[in-house]
Image: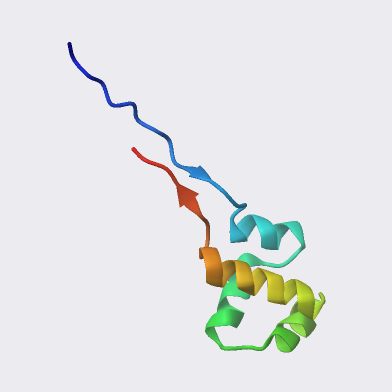
Length: 74
């Protein structure tokens, strides 16, 4: 009897950072550049015209999950 190992498609447990930034009207590439440049949450909030709390949450997502969190097995 042959045993087949099922392939599992990777799935995401969280929306991607790109999706989250686009959802709130922030350009994804500009957001990443601002992190790379070492801007503070306050500087980024002014730049993107959003609250510091929003920037903090997006930055936290990036630090925890990176650009996206894909789990699975193939």
